[in-house]
Length: 287
Image 1 (cartoon, rainbow, N blue to C red):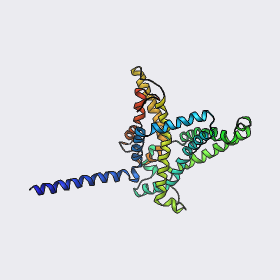
Image 2: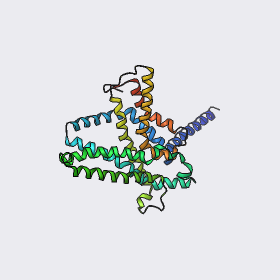
Image 3: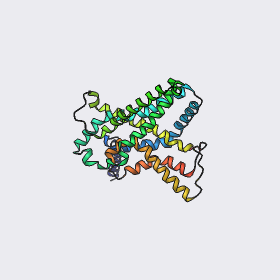
């Protein structure tokens, strides 16, 4: 009898290990990349983002002191925030629609929710214009110097070029939600490596957006003075969290927006920053 109990215990252990492996494998499935991103952001916000944000604050200070290297780093960061979502959309588009087709679904039939205001291209276009302005302000000043301030031609040229490129970039991003008429000519875009690289682009883009989000934790806001102050902060933070978190997360919402836990995991991903600001924090806070 004891041997049988040991055997049963060993079988249960193997089943438990197998179940854990199955859950981990399911987490890394292509259809669960949104959940994986939420977990990744939550862990980063708890352990990493404060350090990364401090580094960027130092860069901002050096930019104020007109340090060329700092201006270059900040400008390249803005370029990355501008390029990564479009690149990720191009790399993932074919695979996304092939996956929907295999499930017998389409964006139009299954995801009518995507027509909401947050999925409107105008929203993303306005956000991209802000990033484009930051690129012009940093790299334009670095490469053109005082000529950018004293002469209208370089400034207007950069603005018009940025406007045209931003229109193209927004088009590439929102083409992600339209099925391609034919397979990509590039063999790489048809291969699985392109989607993996696209996911990496979107994850990196999210980290850069999280730097902007974590800047709030370095503001000396103090503790809420009243329940009204607490409620106002909660409303403001929830609104800002949605605006900052939504653009990089949008691509994965196309697959998991109807899952009951999706919005909860998105809230949990942002909760470390929300809690820090709600209770009052500043640059001297250690956690």
